[in-house]
Image 1 (spheres, rainbow, N blue to C red):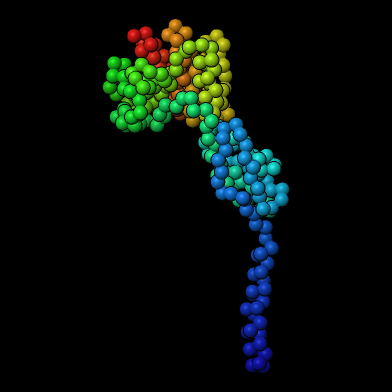
Image 2 (cartoon, rainbow, N blue to C red):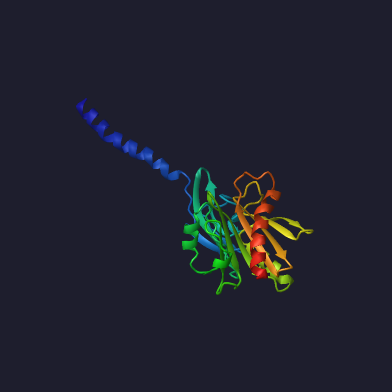
Length: 257
């Protein structure tokens, strides 16, 4: 009896070890890389260790992926691409980079103080004549009047709108600015009467965190893109016009001097 008990005690760990080997039969999946970059409007292909996984994107506005793992860079930003199969998954961080470097977006650190923005914008030329303490900061590039111009507006909560203004030299001036913005935003609408294009950093205004409008001021030979946070307080996109008009008045004054 003692001999039998001793043999049984030896056998139990072996049985347990044998049972645990079943875990190796579960599906596991890996990707050929954990991070990758792709230029705006270009593609990069990801490879999975398992055949025919289900591919998905955490943010299809930034990047989409097809059934073969080909990722399309839709807008500048970051998204997580995931391949899944039989309960297992693997992910890759995709960074979509800009290809058009003609301009530079204004600072959009909403609610930042006047002083904080002034300290942060140190690569532009401060336009003291058109700036108002705690209300408006105006900058030129290279010189006070050099394009692009940048305008920042503040209320008691801090920065609530920013704008980028370029010189209108011909019809391409408007198109060039819009094509630059296409890397970051989606054109939602275009008002042919007022010549205003509305953009959002999402597939719709309701989903967007930032809304922008682009228009040309033919009297002053400028094209302005104005940006504001989409905080859900506007009843319609037309409410944005008041912010845009205030920017327009500032840059028109600057252009006319």
